[in-house]
Image 1 (cartoon, rainbow over the protein chains, first blue to last red):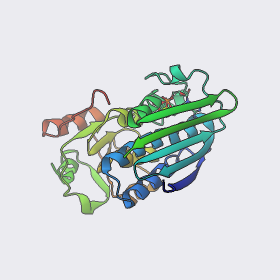
Image 2 (spheres, rainbow over the protein chains, first blue to last red):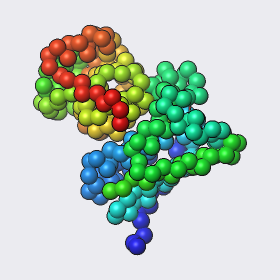
Image 3 (spheres, rainbow over the protein chains, first blue to last red):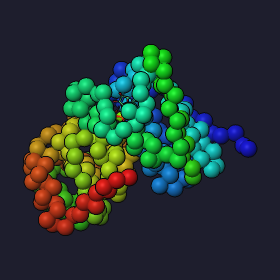
Amino acid sequence: MADPLRFHYKVDGSNFTSAGEASVEVKKKLRQLGFSPETIRKVSIAMYEGEINMVIHARGGDADVFVYPDRIEIVLADTGPGIADVDLAMQEGYSTAPDNIRTLGFGAGMGLPNMKRNSDSMRIDSTVGVGTTIYMTILV
Amino acid sequence: MTIRTISELLDAEVLCCHERLDTDVSDACGSDMMSDVLAHVKDQAVLLTGLVNTQVIRTAMMMDMHCVVFVRGKLPSSEIISLAENNSIVVMASPHRMYEACGLLYTHGLSSKENVHG
Ligand SMILES: Nc1ncnc2c1ncn2[C@@H]1O[C@H](COP(=O)(O)OP(=O)(O)OP(=O)(O)O)[C@@H](O)[C@H]1O
Ligand SMILES: [Mg+2]
């Protein structure tokens, strides 16, 4: 199979204002590549939620997007605190975000379930004290 | 309803993308939690919010929205306005509170069509 197109971004964990810039770039690239609005919307929402999570929970990280003709893969890797109980974190409404995050419009515990809803498959590898890597695939 | 009509109904000041005021929209949503917007909104073209930061605009971009209304007279920074402008999202500021602003639009025929799930 042909090599995928690959886009790589550094996600700055110290800047809430710039969070989401990588997702915006990916959205523009996918539009140029001619993917359907529905596919682009799913990728955008899944990646944006993940990017925000990296900034508010994990001091930033790396985002990679691989574009294949039949699917888009998103890999979000951070060296943050890790997630102790992934099943719990996946529950709607579960959040450890502090109140100051809620005043910024996030921290309702909706992000991870929303990422799962918008992707065709999602895997979370996380080790407490080491970091978290999330793999999402969206079929075209 | 056009975005122009929305600005008139809400006594709002349009802050960017005046050239898009004749865009027709049929649905809106109101929330201060971007988490909720990202999780529960489907095809609403207009977001009303009392939250003012760059993530409001990025959320609207991710959701392919056309217009953001800041309620309660809050004025966004020039950074927020230029982000919206560069991405063709109309931004306006209304003196009305969230409840009133949503009520005005709803009674004039803008629907909500909120997704209960997914
Ligand atoms: N990259 C990450 N590193 C460490 N912990 C994380 C990470 N992503 C999520 N979590 C943990 O999982 C919880 C649930 O995440 P989720 O995205 O569902 O909700 P949230 O980010 O708290 O709020 P929302 O997404 O609604 O803004 C978080 O509160 C946090 O404890
Ligand atoms: Mg989140």
